[in-house]
Image (cartoon, rainbow, N blue to C red; front, side):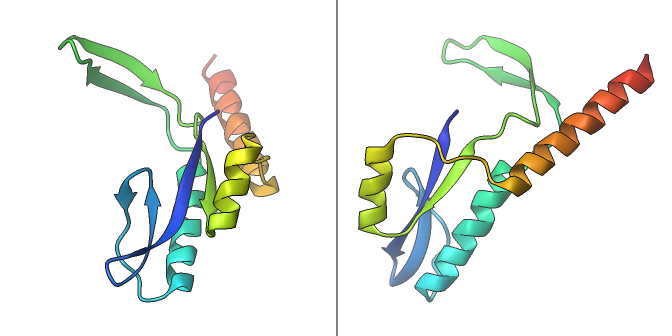
Length: 119
C-alpha cells in the first residue's frame, strides 16, 4: 500500500507541510504546521463512500470504474531531517493505528449489513 508523506518544512517566511512538491498554506509557527499536517494526514486515511468515477487516459480514451471508499493510503508525518532519513531507510509501511482499524472494521460491517439487507 502507498504511504503518503507529509513533511514539515520552512516555507515563505514561516512553516508549512508539503506532500510531494505541493505546499500547504504557510503557518506562523512550526507547531501550527505540525498540527495541521497531523490533521490532514488523519483525514486522508479516513474511509469515504464508494463512487463511480470517469476519467480520461493520456491517449484520450474515457474509462469508468468504481473507486472504493475503503481504499485509502497510509500517511506519515515527517518532521525532522533525521526522521526523514530513518523513514527512507525503513522502507516499510507504518502499522495501522487502533482507531484506523476500528473505523475500517466498522465501515466494513456497515457495508456487509447493507448488502445482506438488500438481498
